[in-house]
Length: 604
Image 1 (spheres, rainbow, N blue to C red):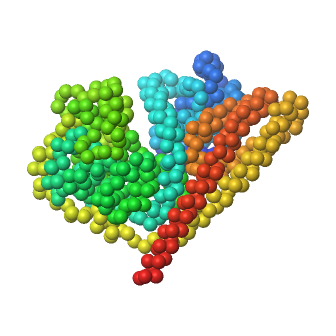
Image 2 (image 1 turned 90 degrees about the vertical axis):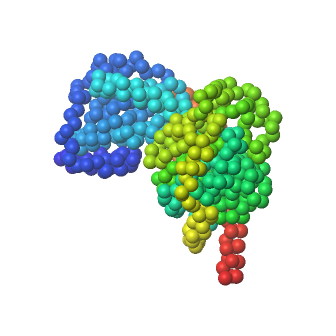
Image 3 (image 1 turned 180 degrees about the horizontal axis):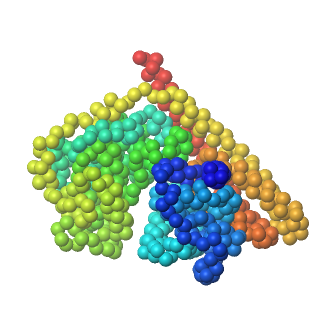
């Protein structure tokens, strides 16, 4: 009998929450007898009464704990207008529940909206909660956790608040650069197909010492030392620092670009900057990769759903995550190459002596940077034991770098920025000491260029054709979406009136609208493309979705559909011509590559 419980539960889990079955399949088999349920079979009235006091206006309830599902079933019955997001920290206990009880009805309940199991799925849960919640979160814990683990519950709540804050910042950042990033993702597809990825060079330079160079004022004092160090270490320039390096005759082994803004044309204006080996991320400004004459490698970021869709990649196959600063990208590139030690140069993260950049960094007007320095509202401890002025943007970068250092415990970090902020996890050492320390190490003058040339193997023409077909199919499908939206608008215009005069007809209309919207939103390309080009609009619609779905009063539901579905459809319609143009250009760029490739083959 037990097996059939497990089978029926697994069937539902596989359909609705495949991440949970994947986790359960990896658990060792021998521990089913260890965990005991504390949840009583009879209804826990005292606990439910306490819960009632904390249910506010929000439609989202985060439940900490699943046990054998009895309390979850009670909540679903008592709160039919809410969505439950349930997290069970104990993987073995959850597996015991699905092995011993038939939970298929519970697991299939439409208002059990999300389920995560175990520590590794907590952030996944946070992401879903952040996507759907509007007001404050209703946070409920099963009695077992209330009595045993109050500290842990407080910690989880704090973790969620931090995650949610970052989520909102990220959404607004995405929104600010929405069109630039989407264009860069799409225009880079051709270059990505014709260059090796950073993942292809994994640990190819194992044991090297890497200097990651940023643009802070401290760089000025260490340029001469970097010249002397070049034969002994790999030098990676992060973003605009390449201007200062080439101005002083230092050629980096690799230049890294992540920023998607056209200001990069100024950074890479001189031909020398364009002759250095380049790592471009898929978010970076596409014209730099176009103009770069030297060896190139690419990185598709874990946050770039557009490229992942067109290449059929998953996040797990990618190495580099987005960070607050291009130095973070350069550090991850160094880690991927197998660096044992990373030295941070020009990483001031503040305004030492009221300076913004090292000399030679000229892509921003002086009045812009001077204004930032003068208005800097904060102070931060520097490596000399005094304080520098800084601002919120640098504080975020500092936190991001320190988190990255913590996440790479096998790499030794050293901060050589002699006037910069203290960086946790990267003790300060001046460049002259570093030079003495590393004088016995050697690195080939063109180590990374040689590596790229070695790895620059034949292009996979099947993959090229596959990406081209997907681009054309998506571009054509955009005009189908335009027609489908027009059909929904037609229905919608009558919906509110009918909800008040012909309720049965309105009910049928609503179902048709839901189905038609489902056909649009469930296309495989829809989420990656539209969450990239209109992140805030999609996020706002996601937040109001639980309110629409759980509303049972017909006129109110029709008003909500009319208001919110109409708005998202209008927003999508506005973006379609912009996207069609981007897709056409992306295909044109790819065809140009294919043609030039064919000419080269003919010459050979």
